[in-house]
Image (tube, rainbow, N blue to C red; front, side, top):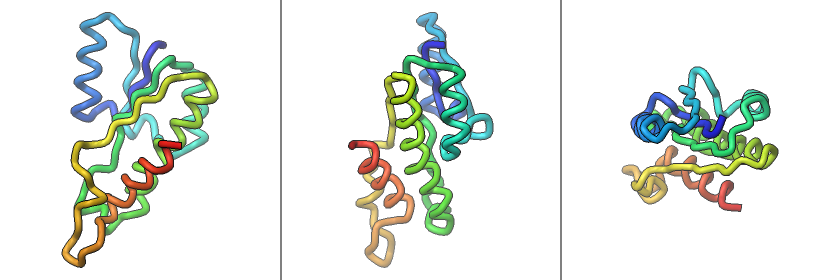
Amino acid sequence: MEILITGGKGQLARAFQKFFAQKGLSYQAFSHREFDISDLKAVLSAVRTLRPRVIINCAAYNLVDKAEEDFQEAFRVNTLGPYNLRLAASEVGAFLIHFSTDYLHWLRLNLTGRPSQRGWSRLESSTQNSK
């Protein structure tokens, strides 16, 4: 397989699938139910088995208001997930492409003047995965 796409049911992932299909490129897309990027063992197992040349991470916890209540889940998907993909990609020599939004969530302040919980999880992902 040439390309592995996470977050396969999302808008960005669907656009990639359409493009790759038109170009005749080999890809496989997985929804979060099929491929939990926050589970390191599952990520390593899948990537070792599939051995993609490219991993495109379109997965994200994007329920902004709910992230304030469920920070742990936002952190798992937005921080641990990309980190796990980076480890797996490195192991098999795959190129990892990680997408975030064009909205700077860590600068979005809630009513108390603190960055939102989702923002913190996205910022941490950017920090961890830029190393």
